[in-house]
Image (cartoon, rainbow over all chains, first blue to last red):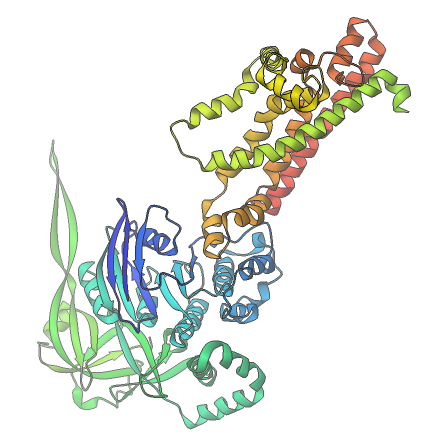
Length: 403
Length: 231
């Protein structure tokens, strides 16, 4: 998929994406031209020259300000969106359910909170049945739990082939969880573009993040107890599930069942390189694996949450600490974390400002997970580095709390 | 009852005035709505010039405007001649001429509220409408008009009230034909000239109360729409 967008003095972006990418994250500093790019793609910038592979398809856009029509209520807004809906558009109730705003249907627009209005705005865009949906920070006012569920709902639509989603967000964890590919926009140009993990790593480097997040992928684990719950759910609400199956595709319903089965304690179990990892429910995104009915799961781990244990013999029996997760790793690089400091020296008559880089008390370790090609970041102190005699090539256990 | 209070000839003037005000404000809405929408979305160096011409009746002495209109309506002018060959009657000193004059005189009162209402409308509503598949006309009818309820009512109210109180222009182009072109303000002027202070008082108080009620209704309506939209 190739996209080229040009807007005089604002945007000159050439974007190249894999044909199978359907959920694409977009990030970059404020004022970089992300919103202008979306406006150009949506066809609402008169002076924009845009070439895309979806030229003839229906493109929907949702702004950060929900722009719900205030002269009518939620129902009226959805009815207006349905006037020119494409034939394969989802029914209103499915859109409302997916965006968690069924209870808002009869509310006047001025009675909605910021987050509620954003949810309704996304539902309104979906009711119109777009082939491509552009979300310009459209979920910024929604709480993290609901936000991730809506992202997952959109992701399911993408996976089942009903939608291509482009999402602008400053929350890199959100983008890391759901994006197939990531675009980094700066000064009107697509500076970075490619698989999420690669682009994220470059973005962290570029913006000298002291605590980057690593994105890990694994397979979901179904325990006997949980599959019981799964069956019960299926029997109890078969009617509802059949509807959802049709609307959200086969993967969508599998993911839905996954949610239900794991909801007991809010923790899901994911196999990463053969090791069981516990992750809190709201921090996981699901997507199908190629050529398999098994679902893949993705989650993000912040570098500051990762600790290093050199006692590799005790891998599975660290029963005296509360940290749940452990992965055997090899240190692939040790990078000092530098922070940009501005020092001001005052002298009797002149004030001199000096800018320079200084090393902080922390170092960033890049860890290769053994039996996997995945990378984990750990941010630890200089003191620990010297105390534990850590060096490149050393085998260690990375322990981290429930993400 | 009204006949006793005002007198038959005054009542006739009231009816002529109301008819003129209704027709003028109705016509103005049709003219000003598309014109204001065009102006609000028009960007050109000539825009200040056009805006000034359209706002001229606000500052021009009504007698000056009335004089030029009278000249334009005369059978010697192209407009007067055209009208005469079309209808067979004279445009000056006729009710139709009065309507045309009032429309021009009250145009800025309808145009300004609509223009500022349309200019303040967030364009992103239209961007959303466009991506939802609305044509420009449909978006105007279904989105812009309902969102501009308040400016539309204000434009209607102001042009109606302004036509009711108009004097200079109608005196110039309408003359003072009872039942045809004699409007309230001219009737009042005549009563004062003839020292009929009682009927002048009655008419004045009626106009005062009417103007007050009209403005109160407009302010009330504006308050309601504002709170409805949560602004």
